[in-house]
Structures are given as structure tokens and as C-alpha cells.
Image (cartoon, rainbow, N blue to C red; front, side):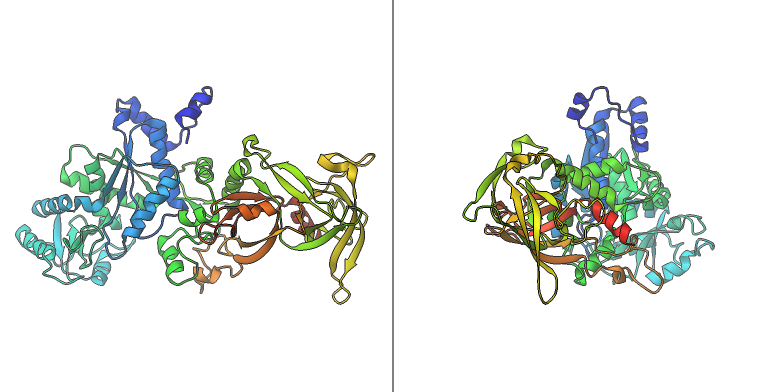
Length: 571
């Protein structure tokens, strides 16, 4: 999305239009008033929004920013058995968090009365009838892709009988599943969706808004186009799975004889590696306890990404990067993670934390000295200010930053090797202490060069390696949850034969550890984000963090080119 301010800052930059924007531009060039452009985002309140919904949100609301008009939020609340007010509230919260605000707030239930009147109109026209077939029988009569369907034995009821039966459905005279109202179209249509689809079904369930006023509820296909028409939607944008429904969308509008009707256009949905986007599958993960909840940081829900620490700016930039296409494809997870890193690199303050510590003793550093080093919080942001880090004789470093027998091009700690402690001095390993029982390295003893403070290079030699550390006497213990993709497969929604997507859950996708961090991390507040240098980006969990007791979630790891090289060399 390009905002008006961005356009002013880059007047020479001409934006490439996607196929939907070209369609809108054509409409405008044909004389449509930009102020009368009307879009909508129509989620069903039966779960939390996920990143796939974020694509539709950014598209619909972004079109208003770029081309004018309005965008409504409309809840498709036509299935009361699965819908709750908590989902309505969560969806509104997620949209605002993403940075958008709707022009009108509507519900399909606002139109139940009008939809009922229009259903009566279709019955009188001979375009709808009450059917006594149960759900299984309806499927049997519908036919297949290769075989036409069969007419329902109740298809030729008179309009008078259908009106009487439909009124009985509305008044609660019949049981759930006993009767439905179906459109009378063509049971031999090549489009299965046109083979007398159901318009109303009986559901004796309390609705979260209308209570018990209704016991018949419209199907999505019956409510969708008509709700668009009521709101004056000009461009009804849907993901590709609704392409097969477009003939029915158009048929309903044509049969009602409305003067102005919307137009449906489909775009490719978002498919992301190592992720499931089906709300049914996400609900199963939650209800069966495979994850902590809808806001589990491993979930692709907006709530989960938000708790993990992903920023709305990163999500918006990701959507801009992948664009809008006509054909489905799967986006590599690294594309999304790179968008996260790119934004956090600009805004996240830097800190140091050691995850697998080994003590490094600087033997020629005064024992009673603690030197305060002034460092900038973020080299990408001057306004982020500075902080002080205590430097002392004993510090913690990462065990993985030491090799007794280093490979070629190794630039970290090794016997006799010199490296720089980030923001501090250059040190050289003089002695390696090992555990007499296990033989594992337990301590490193070094000397430092006092002439190398402030990043100064030692005279006559060039030190390239830089490692992070934490002061031993005042390092703070911080609990950290290391999250990785929930699934081991790139396509968990396509499990191997004999398995389900649940069999592809990675049992190690969540790891609890304790890191040793520089003292300032104790002051982190819930919601704060940091780059732990050389490790990754982390977020103080708003659920598990308390005052003076932050609990960090890993948002994304940093790239580690050396780890890849070493793995390749050892393979």
C-alpha cells in the first residue's frame, strides 16, 4: 500500500497496479465517482483472524487509501452455532492493531428481515421451494462432477404451499434438518453450486445478536451478495475458493431485479509454508489442546503473531511484498520472516543475552573494577538514545563461540585467538579449563588489551571477530520461550496417506530456556521488543511478563551464515 504521504515524498515513483487495481482504475476512467467506491471485509465471527485474513484486510482497506471510497467491516453472522461475541471483539481489535479503521460496521444479521422478504419474493416467482430431503439425501440427489443431479421430489410444489411451509419453518413448527428452503435453478448445471442450493436451514440456536428472534438462518451464499447490494458494495473481493460461487452470486442478484448490483472478483489466498490456514483446523488445534490457545505464538492468527512480537508494520510490508495474484501459490516462510526482521532492525533496541553460558575470566583486568560502557541503543535510530553496560573481570559468553580446534576462517574464540567483546575490549584466550570428569570446557581465561576500548583496533593486528557477552556479577536471569514453526512439513494441510495434520506437529516447536542478559533487560516492560545481538529478535510476552519480571518470546532468529557453512562442511 502506498499512503498519500508516501506518494508526496516520492512523486516520481509510479506504482505498479495489480489486476484488481487495474479493474478499479478502468471503472474510474469510465466515469465512476471515486467517492462512491465501496469495499468490505466480511469475516465470520467463529474464530480469530489469521494472517490469510490480514491479506484481505490490507487489500480492501488499502484500496481505499490508494483509490478513495469507503470500506465496511461486515460480520457474516449467519451460523449462530459457531459464532460468539468474543470473536466479534477480537476481530475488531485485530483490524485496528493492523492499522485500519472501517467506515461502517455492519452484520449480516442486520439484514435478516430484508433477506426473508427477498426469499418470499423468489418463492412467489417460482425460483425457490421448500424441500423435505435431509442433508444426506440432498447430497445424493446433487450428483457429481461427472453426473447430473436429480430433481427433488418436492421441487414442483406450488408457490402457495411453499409460502405456507416456509412460514412454518420461520415460526419453529419443524425440527432442525426437517426442511430447507432451496433455490430452484438447474439440477443438471455443470456448476454443482447451481444445483438447487440451500438458502435457509432450521437452527434452533440462540444468536449472539438477535437472540431467539429467528430459528431459520440464511446460508452464506444467500446472504453474501444481497448484503453487498444493500451496502452498495461496488467491488466484492473474495479469495479464489469462491470463484465457483460467482454464478450463484450473480443469479440471486439477477432474480431479485435490483437496479445496482455489486461485482465479485477473486484473488489468490495466502498460503504460507509450515502453516495451516483453515479455520476449522485452527479451531481443532485450540479445542484439543495442541496449542495454548488462539493467541499461541506458534499460531498464524493475528493474536498469536501479535503475542509473539510481530509488528503490524511487518505484516503490512509482507502483504505489499507478495502482492495480489490470480493464482494460488505457497509463499516461503523466509519471505515473511525477512519482513519481520527488516522492520525490527529499524525499531528494536539492541541488548545482549547469553543462552548457553561459559565463563570467561580476563585475568589482567583489575578485580575490583567495574567499568561502565556507554553504547547506543539502536544504530539504525539515533533517537533511541544510549545505555550503560557494566564491563568487569568475569563475563559470560556463548559456549558455541569457542572451538578447541577451530575450522578454517573461524573468527571467534579459540586457544590463542583474539576477538573483541562487543562494545568492550579485545581479548585473547590464554588457558582453557576443562571439567576433569566430562572433559567439557568449563572456563576460559584470557588477557585483554587496554588500548582497544571504544572499538579501537590493536596496533599491528586486525581483529575481525566480535562476540556478545553479559557481565557475570550482575547478569539477570531471563526466562525465554524459543518458538519455531508448529509443523515439520512445509504443507501440513496435505499430510501423507494414513496421517492427519496433527501427526505433523513438531514436539520441539516450543522450548523453554533461561538466558543471562545485561542488567537493563530487568527493566523491560510487557510488549517491549529487542534485538538480542547475534541471536535474534525477542518480545516481552504481554501475557507472562510482570513488572520487573519480563518473559521473552523469540520473534525471529537472526541469519547465521557461519552455522550454515559449518553444517555444510560437516555434512
